[in-house]
Amino acid sequence: MATRKTKTTTTAKKNPWRSTHVPLPSWIMFWALILCTMALIVVNFSKAFAPAPVDAIDDTTAAQFAAIRASLEQQVNDLQAQIPSGESDERSLVKNASKVTCGLSWNASTSTQTIAFTEPRTRIQMNLPYSFDWGNDRYALTLGDLGDPSNPPEVDFGPVVEHNEQYGCYITRDSSIVIKDTGASPSEVRKSLKPLIVRERAVGGVTVLSYTNPQDTTWPQRWEVFGRTHTYTLASHGWLTDAEAIKIIQSLKVVK
Image (cartoon, rainbow, N blue to C red):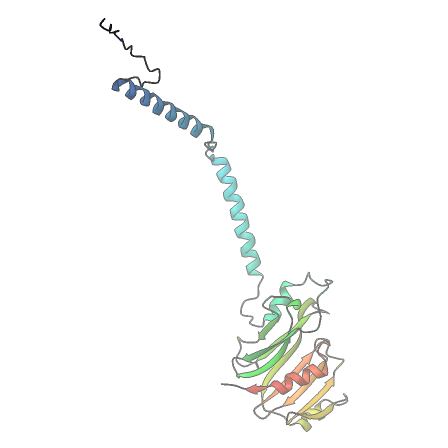
């Protein structure tokens, strides 16, 4: 008996994950909407965080600002006019600018370092005491009488001191050294200082006369130095010690 064949029917199943075809115009429309949405967001945020508009300055406000500026410029001109013209001594500038400073507490501490300073006219070099505690202004180490060649060169140094005299209150540096050409001999100077008590000694091969003049309220302590090429007058209001003065005298020399 022949074997009966059975017909097998295959049924295709639908795949639910199969991609769906989207027409090109639809894609274009989709991305166009996305771009429009992003542009709208950017515009809204730009307006939200934009700086507030500044109102224009009216004529009245501009006139007020102009009046204030003119007033400030006039005050500056008035202050500049108070500075004496043609006065080269910086100590006098301090005097005129500091009449309201009397009564303040100035730092007169000991020096913290030594500065090798050369006077430009005579080329005399000297080692001078210095401290930043005395004030970092241009008067911490100054030159006097530079504008008048007929006056001997002068170097002021040391802490600030006040002076109350008949013409007002002013400030200077405590010490100064004046450089002069050779002149009178030690014996002649000593005669002129009578009846003051004068000490004479040799320091570094030169003669030094030291004394105190109570009649001089600005620089009562003095050291007269008779060098080979110049004579020097070292003076102090009272801060400079004799030992410090001797160190300065020993450092004096002519340099190129």
